[in-house]
Length: 404
Image 1 (tube, rainbow, N blue to C red):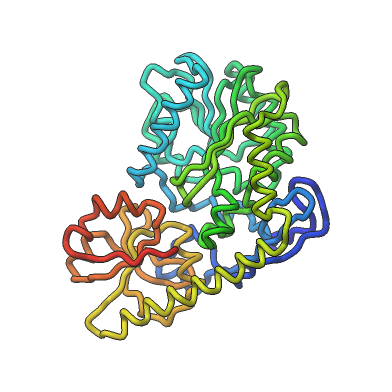
Image 2 (cartoon, rainbow, N blue to C red):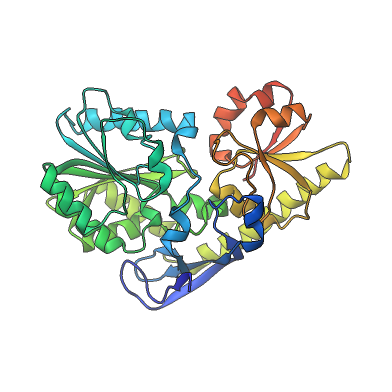
């Protein structure tokens, strides 16, 4: 079988999980297809479960990681906006936590090296762990690469070759991991006594409040709040020392959390955040039922808007950018074939392929302009300010339809 059904919470082992959203059977969101592969495409249940003990939201199934990551079309560095974001993150970490050029720095899920590339050239001990073929696109020869999933074995290899690690980053990666308790134990094992563990993940409350259901896909096994992260870290001997909501992330609004060894009391700011989440209904099933209703309304409104535009036969609609989350959106809309003509993208690995499930051909940004397409559904809506200012499509008179 290509997937595992979840029978207990991956953080606290609670067997009583409540299903609160079902988006049907969907394909793997990053598995863009060659034409010959369309007939053999696989789909898997896309459902969200709630643990009422630690309040982690999690998918009902875990698809085999090899199916997702062995041939992976997502290259982080294709996004200039994301490069800028990670550059600011590195500058923040260096300044706030006194990260020195000789300190060991590790990025887990380093993709094509986008985050590690943002450290100044004088930084010498840059380590990357990346299981997918995206690591073939790492050009920075200073990055010491482990082409593998992060594990106890990899952590032991790191300690055998380097000192303990000062900074460990996992940006838009923790949500991908099934065995989160083992992961945190392995991180604690190699983390320097004054080291920091930095994560960025889509924030559960942004998803729930704004109806951002497109961040749900098979790579994202878990949907975190401060409640669930605090439970995870405390269970494995780490302590949250910093948190910040950020409007920008690889998948949308995110939360940045920094943890260290459990030698400090829980800060007032973390206690306040836990209280805020409680007041906003993290422990109340009505919060999650409301999200389900919101999701249905958003899908219906967006679908009707697209069909209204297409009723004028002169109007053709494309999609602008081809992120993984865009495929959850497109498959949930359940539009008739040929309603959307193309999807444009600047990642060369995706151009010429077809979107999972909806099988729309991926073309270059310039192609939309040549075809005179006036309307485009902006799938990377989290980068809307960037694209509204810089895209040639807008400069040539195109209009974005922005979901959410």
